[in-house]
Length: 184
Image 1 (cartoon, rainbow, N blue to C red):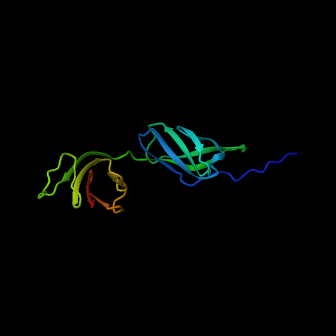
Image 2 (image 1 turned 135 degrees about the horizontal axis):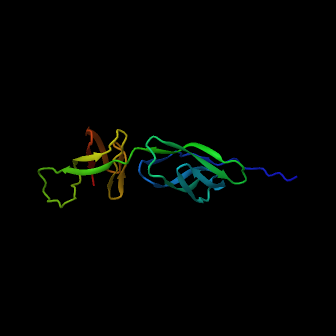
């Protein structure tokens, strides 16, 4: 009688995959252990496609295509079929649908009144505080503003990256005041 000793099943450390309501596709990088053992993944109300596991078997691309009509607040389990196993491994809360992505509908930046250099449309002066008023649809209290200044990207208020720091406050529903300092 031949007996095969199986390795421990894969573990996935970064579930759930968070998808905005109305979005139908997402590319996600699974992080975990023994991800090369995954043969396929199934998710209700969608399809999943696995990419090739990294050489260390700790990362693997997962492409999800979900039905666009899933309500915010929905949590979906995933069934992972594993090499040499009869039954799939179930990951509860593998896909979480959150509210629709906020949309900036208007942005107004206040320019300092006493500038020595005339700025073109879309240019901002460096080395000083600026304020911007953003009109945002579907803004939630946990929304994040991502500011990209060339190679420096800030994704959360209060966090500094290099010489750029962002502070954001919600002035009233639908409006977000953004202040940042950029010392070039």
